Amino acid sequence: MKKKVVSMVLAAIMGVSLAACGSPSDDSSKGDDKKTEDEAGDDKTADDKTGDDAEQGDEADNTGGDAGGDVANKDKPLVWFNRQPSNSSTGELDMAALSFNDKTYYVGFDANQGADLQGTMVKEYIEANIDSIDRNGDGIIGYVLAIGDIGHNDSIARTRGIRKALGTGVEKDGDINSDPVGTNSDGSAKAVKDGEIEVNGKKYVVRELASQEMKNSAGATWDAATAGNAIGTWSSSFGDDIDIIASNNDGMGMSMFNAWSKDNKVPTFGYDANSDAVAAIADGYGGTISQHADVQAYLTLRVLRNALDGVDIDTGIGTEDDAGNTLSDDVYVYNEEQRSYYALNVAVTADNYKDFTDSTKIYDPVSKQLDAGAHPTKKVWLNIYNASDNFLSSTYQPLLQSYDDILNLEVDYIGGDGQTESNITNRLGNPSQYDAFAINMVKTDNAASYTALLNQ
Image 1 (spheres, rainbow, N blue to C red):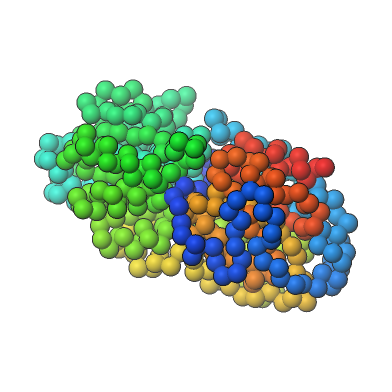
Image 2 (image 1 turned 90 degrees about the horizontal axis):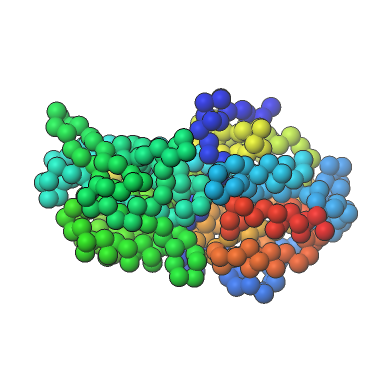
């Protein structure tokens, strides 16, 4: 039976997930012999596994001998992941996309729970280090904030989480304003206000000195290089007034850390628990948030596997499968109304970072190989919105490439440019050759760009 989230948790979920990031990664992220396509126009598949699809006889699957079989594309399993179909301005879920067919689901993470964790992590760090955190001794704890994408709900949630925890949030339309402030040296910005923290009987002002969307000249958001340039500008303007750096992801956070904050011993807090950020905690990186990418990647492909096998969607998730794979309810929640699986987040700090040093290690409780006879090979089309995205390319995709073998799925990995849907959709020229689809949009509003292709 599917797990349901209690109403308070459901209300907290914003509806868009993960944490897609925008910093570049090196070629090691592409994994073994299954390469992501980095440029439009190249229709070569990532890896040509051979599977005997003639063995596929499941009534619910009914694909026949060839990949894709006789099932209409509009009726094939579809998983949206990392970017939940929704209105980028209001956050309202696109339920038409989430219920495209009876085999459509979303996989991401609990954005609000993670955002609150990040804000709490920063606040607790300030309180624990109050004797040294105020670098110029002016009684004002100043922070700067790198915003990933002003139209992405994960970015919005994380900005709100920081401002909520530090008391700098200002209400707008019934929620905390997530707009960038530009610069705010005197505390007069309208999008934020000065907060206050009291430690050991002494009160300190908390001020958001500056914040901006990290968007490069080509239009790509979550851009690490832009963040590195921004901290150079901010440090020139504010100097010792900067006591904390907060970032919507580790890609931007690490860029600022390496460019300035490491040498100046200013703690930087990010999100995603990328391997380089976790390792940097030993060198003064303040902390990060693990969104349980190992669980998310498994769920992304597991939901497709179950739909292809025609079994209960909870198989190998909340209910043990025939190989012994199962997830405990402390690492994910399922929202049946939203047809969405959400991984839960974990704060990674100096106290526990050694447990998170390998971000591409699969989750042991769901690491058992499925029998190929009972679960014959199926072919999946899967795209990453930006081949240069640090989190998705360096962490998420390597995990997917481990799970696809375990789940007997032959996956073609398609890498986009992070800017246009057409760079991706142009490479879905023949959806009939696939049994299922996993889609990571550039913008959360654009689900119809993909469903239109499947409806043809």
